[in-house]
Image (cartoon, rainbow, N blue to C red):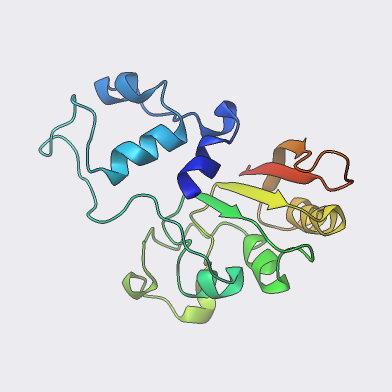
Length: 183
């Protein structure tokens, strides 16, 4: 399940970093999975009140199975700080890597929906708000190809960590988890 997958990520990747508020102190030792569970349940740190913070309505964390290119074009990554991709063995679709390799557009306002952007659709950077890309790969050749595109593209990505996991002992299949950050 999604919560188990997020909870299994290395703590240095999922550790919630916040500003120096009472709420940050209260949530500083939570993993992303614990924080997601708290947000999904509608709970918030006891030090926060609805009058002290502007909270957007709606889900804070969700899972959607979709072709990555379709999900991007429908605005699923708008407003997202973290994007998790788990492509098939062939790797990411060219349309997705092309979008991720676009430079950050400081003129594009933050929006969680394309309908809130007053821009022509062909000018929207669909992954503009994403600062962390978590790439899960079962195909090393495709991962190498996509990594080269990300690191040499104009999107400003750098590889923060890469970890291999042997899911099926005795086989040569390795799952790789890469964390990319924007510079």
